[in-house]
Length: 166
Image (cartoon, rainbow, N blue to C red; front, side):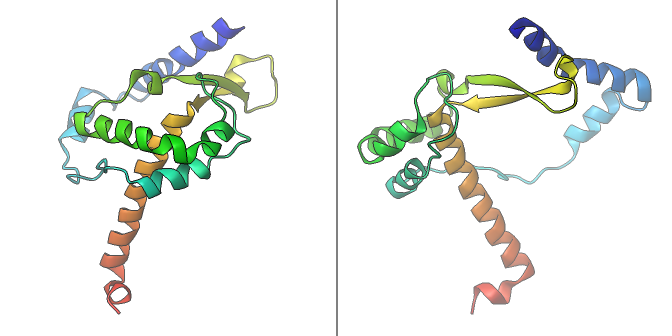
């Protein structure tokens, strides 16, 4: 059964693109080149060095009820050891940001098929959910949270400048 889900999830995106290309006829290489030639906001997402307080807060707030990733490391264990493991984890995350490399083991996820429609016997009624390792969650949460904080700040600055300066 695992092979059936694997084969379906691996091919579903390419099958959809094939249908799009043949069905619409308006989507082709020119549209793709146009999309990528459009200007994008420079520096729209940056990775920031992490601080002790940020990582400790995230580690302590991990949901102990969540499923474990491929490392089988429970969030409860990591949360309880937050003060002990924060320093080495901060070093690894900052080194990763500095070198522009993300550890391969943290790129892996446990993929679980979740039924989204009626019949559980049809593979097309399932969608994949990736369960990340706990340390991947910490890295992503920290960086995404900082990015969203900055986006909210700049949005407020543009739309409501008087609120921020009074």
